[in-house]
Length: 125
Image 1 (cartoon, one colour):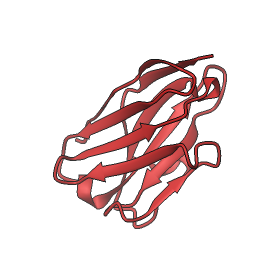
Image 2 (cartoon, helix red, strand yellow):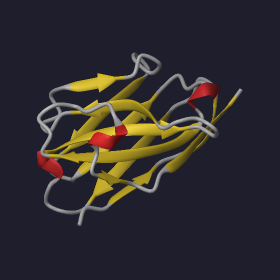
Image 3 (cartoon, one colour):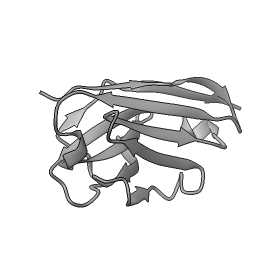
Image 4 (cartoon, one colour):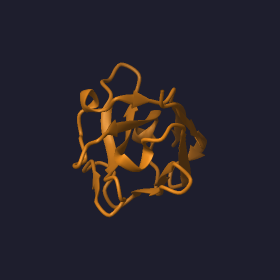
């Protein structure tokens, strides 16, 4: 069984930065594409960023491109999301997810096998 645990969320002012981490257990991390999603109250869960199994390829939603950076450390079984220039509209619960065996970066939630419990990010104006 794969477990994912997010950390690093919190309250920050607009223009500030946060770094989310997602630590995973299990032996499938290096063989899995990893993604970050977010869900605001009353809205559907949306793709934020994803990284390929090696970390060489990354993909971002247009709304965060240029502000967020996803990275992974396969030796530590951890994926990160560096969030800069945060805006109030970035406020949401952020989830990391694992897509086992995927050779590409999925952008739909149904393509991911395992999910963390989420971490709250609140950006005040």
